[in-house]
Length: 189
Image (tube, rainbow, N blue to C red; front, top):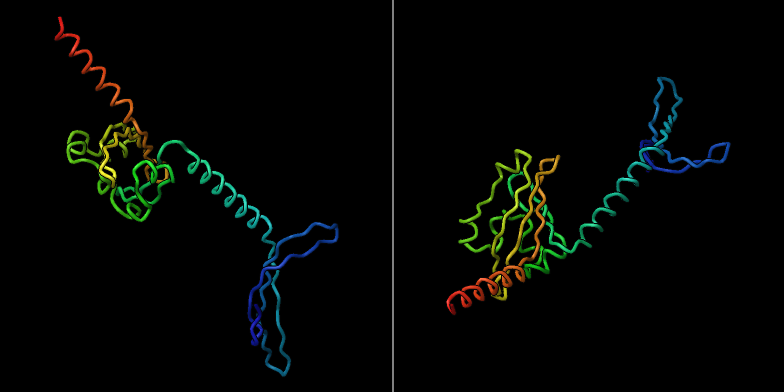
């Protein structure tokens, strides 16, 4: 907007002679002369390409955010220090948490059992070396139920990490039932 002193900036759209419409950043600056004349100089900058790039970036971000939200697995994103910066809806549903329960906290603050953290500690060293770290941990949900998760974590090129959480509770229960069945069968003979 142009102030009463003649200085300001505004975005507008102009139509060229051939009919194309461009985005323009229009700036005004007062000119003071030594005599009694004064004026305003206007500078017009074609910002069409940068506006198109910004719109494409926004559309791309929306596309990937939708992909993450539609994922059947829980997804967490954290910074290089292990502080959680994002989590999708499936992660919240799976663990029975609200975003404010984990955003801004270290991943170790999630409700993992102490036993599972001791048996499979976080391996940020391997992530920083470019490895995909796969681990199984036990989580205690707010309602007290036990949830077994498989975590696949990877450091991304921008220095953040992504962890994909898969609920493997049914698989673990099936494996336990099979072991118990085999033990009973072995004792019968």
